[in-house]
Length: 299
Image (cartoon, rainbow, N blue to C red; front, side, top):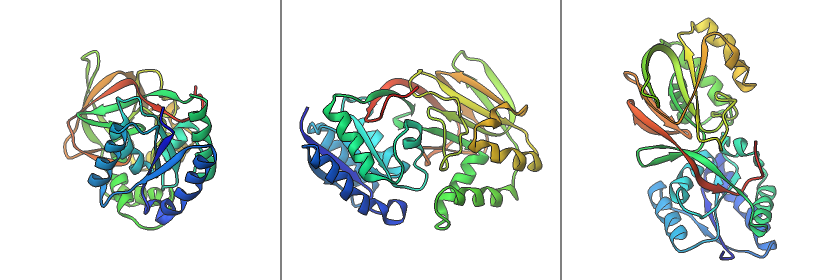
């Protein structure tokens, strides 16, 4: 493996934390004996092109510095290759890093972990979700949660998970359950009135909302959380439980474990890793061991 590591940096992540975070992360890697080059981009398309060039040229690892949006871009470059992915999580949600047990907003510690695992030949393989040619690492959101995601992404303040709390309150005003058609991997079709359907490779989205709390990133399966036709009052009562994952025991919540599924519902846009995928219907597949990550052993 080459000793050159590529830092894939979003300088605007976390209200400017990305630019500052690259320095201690790079220092930790250099202190461990690696040479470091930094990749930026004029926009997302340019950044992804540069990241793919780094992978094709044989970089020892691609280390994403930013939030889940930057990780999402990095996954498009490394998925299906043997180039390991490191994460220096300094964005707003940081759910990919949370799911892997990596530090959040501690770039020096994240850099040291990446360096130690690279020197020791460590890291681990995890599954990814795939919709068409798009890869995702955490959760595919659809329904009420994707509408909250859309609103939250447009909000500049407050920072962190609280913006999604406020976005949820705003979206409740227009809330209505949605008629879904779910086609599971055994070709079973289910029609259900649902508040949301979340497809989890990882456990959380929105800065720690554990919507798919029992999901595992190495079992070759999605955890699909279906929240039924809740009233506004029920949704408000259940919502705080999402941060603990205890909502899964609510009678309006069901979980399916599948290798693939198709989601269909009128007027709904799917989001994965916080990024828009497009309108439903969408078909998602869980791809086992699709990427190697520089993260400690997980469950």
